[in-house]
Figure (cartoon, rainbow, N blue to C red):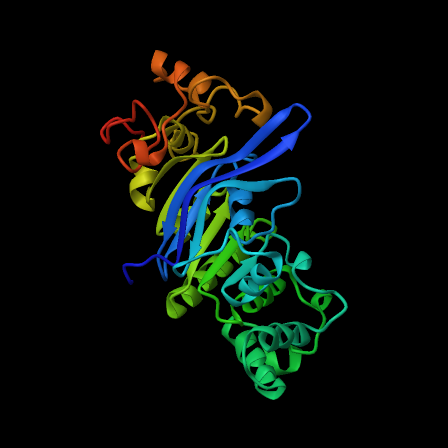
Length: 328
């Protein structure tokens, strides 16, 4: 890997103005993704993980908007680009894989037309060459008899095969970054493993950086090199996946790990974190996690939770766990 990250997000803040006040679904989030690296972003529903990905690719739904920070892709800032220029970045420099492949594929066009259209838009090649590359892309993602299936429509494929087509579509313009938002949620467990293995292999071979957004810790453990844990719009913890999953330092991450079936082995019920993540419009004073945190002290209740940069570079907590304290 090179020293320069493919994607660098610095103090990213997204706000949504409402009648009741301004909501902040993404609050001072910072991370890097190196070439060929898979960063898993995990958290409960509403934690801000998908909103972070949408901000990177410039697909925030109004009235949500970026109000602070920077997004730097391949050394160039992209969060302040006008719509037309950002549209050129999507597809060419950033590929996207979403949860439901039917939302990414046009049901009225054969898959081959959709692949060639993307390549002709972003690459300087002829229609004939685009067609051959489309066949090769389908073969690479494991579509059997790709030359015969290239003129098939999306509804003629199974869910797993459609997701393979979407991965081919995301990678066909040779992007340097892929954002995969819950790419396996709608698939059977056996197909999930195939899709994750495929995504890992293709991105390793191409040196493509990947932001993998998911709520599934099993997917993170299997696919990611590093993991970023989000809570109430902020990064709670970030670090190498094995280290974070086995020796977490943030109490929230420790609670997530402790609520897995393996950690609760021998108990009648799974361990759980008491309470629920607060709504964006009703965040508590101080650290957003303190009402649920067994380690909370006065400082946590009075002062906003620290950012990753303000702590030791891994856990955004005033009183992080020592490695020996974390749940096994």
